[in-house]
Amino acid sequence: MGSIELVCPAGSPAMLKAAVEAGADSVYCGLRDETNARNFPGLNFSPEELAQAATWAHARGRKLLVAVNTFARAGQSARWRASVDAAATSGADAVILADLGLLAYARERWPDLRLHLSVQAAAGSPEAVRFYAQAYGVRRIVLPRVLSVQEVAALVRETEAETEAFVFGGLCVMAEGRCALSSYAARRSPNLCGVCSPPEAVSYTEEDEGLVSRLGGFALDQFAPGEKAGYPTLCKGRFEARGLLSYLFEDPVSLNAMSLLAGLKAAGVTAVKIEGRQRGKAYVARVAGAFRQAIDALDSGADPEAFAPLLTDLAEGGRETAGAYRKLWR
Image (tube, rainbow, N blue to C red; front, side):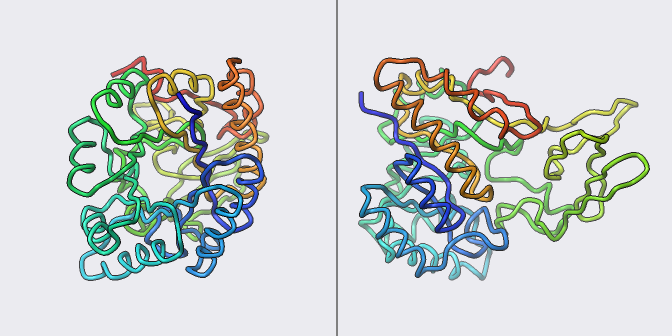
């Protein structure tokens, strides 16, 4: 069994170079518009930068993957098709798609372009994977973050497509690809506009009770002096219900599945993926470097778990989870 491919995020050309230099095998990025799910100001690539990035990565034996992973809106699908065209002409190694119409367009317009299925499509069963592979020629499935290691292994056994699993970074409570919470408060949703909790809708104010975070004017959390304050998203807000103050939807924690690398490799996973295109080059350099060491250790027969503590301070709220991979609930 070969080594697991390490796929790292790039929100900018500088971040892409940092990821590759730290040990990424592949880097994924998006264009500077709402066709990708990290549409934040100051992030992402122009078509020209995308072509330059592909050339730079290929010269170093690395791959460039382009995310066009939001859902096209009625009457505006030309914008999404243009992003697929830009990815194809840039020399990218694959495009990551979720929208069925875009998958059909990409297969017909660019028959030699390698297609990966975004986590946003939520293909979590062998039947779903086979459908995308047979109907659209999808070569790789980015697995939804709701499967245990045992479920991943069962899926791999019953399908022929490659699989890619998230192992580090932000977690989201949404049913993959169908989040609407952000749009209620901020009028923009991640799956249509490419941004969850847009920065212009976020605010922090010092009040008598402490630091208060808001989204679209709605108070989502309150922090005591010295308490770590996370980025305000509705799914990770702290609310009072029936007299109990708690995180009703999801605790503000980060995924770190480095301790499960051996299990994921044994399950047949092709690639592991780092989340965080919005986090910057220092972040990706540290995470890519730690996972590079862990994967190399695994390949040599050593225990990769020893490298997990290298990243604890990067976790949201200072807390980590193995997510659904080590599922104890149903």
